[in-house]
Amino acid sequence: MSEAADADIGSYKSFNDFFTRPLKAGSRAVAAADFVCPVDGAISQFGSIDDHHILQAKGHRFTTTQLVGGDAALADQFRHGSFANLYLSPKDYHRLHMPCDGKLTRMIYVPGTLFSVNPVTARGVPNLFARNERVVCAFDSVEHGPFVMVLVGATIVGSMATVWHGVVNPKRTNRTSEWTYANQNIVLKKGEEMGRFLLGSTIVLLWKQGAIAFNEDWAPERTVRLGEPMGQRAN
Image (cartoon, rainbow, N blue to C red):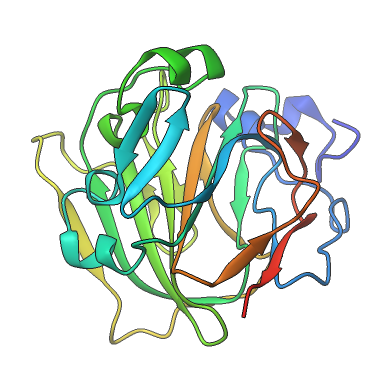
């Protein structure tokens, strides 16, 4: 609460309002790196995409096509690219920010299950991040090309929100929903808020081949903070 913009617990209208409370301005410094960490949390896995396979945990992989809801053309942009899976536990700050500047191009809601996404479940449930409900946010960066931020739902996290849409929670018909923004100029700057979870969950980021060289200090299970250096432009 010492970091909250409003330290008065009684002022929050609901538990969700309290849980997603904003931080005081200046609580997280945004590094001068080309890419910054978009959340407070912990690294699940990160590294190179093997053709189109992403490492979830030892012995478990899923494909970029599965992750983005079956859109092979979107997934193909990230073949042999890079990924990062970042886990937010219930104790973490629950707003998501931009790793770099980006112009929003599409948003895809993909229905799915709501398994827990904690490290134990990630090690035990195959295709976890490609099975849970998720919101796929596609951006384009002038400097770094296309990138994707995938908000993965989890137990009790039946809806997620973005700053341009609000809560993304279509009627549950088991159908994928999509919004396009080609005629809108929705541009978010590095470090700017882009969305939030209503409880602990995971965000998966995808970049094209050669876009990012990760911070040498990063390692699986390492704690990370919003705004810290995540990487530099690779070429």
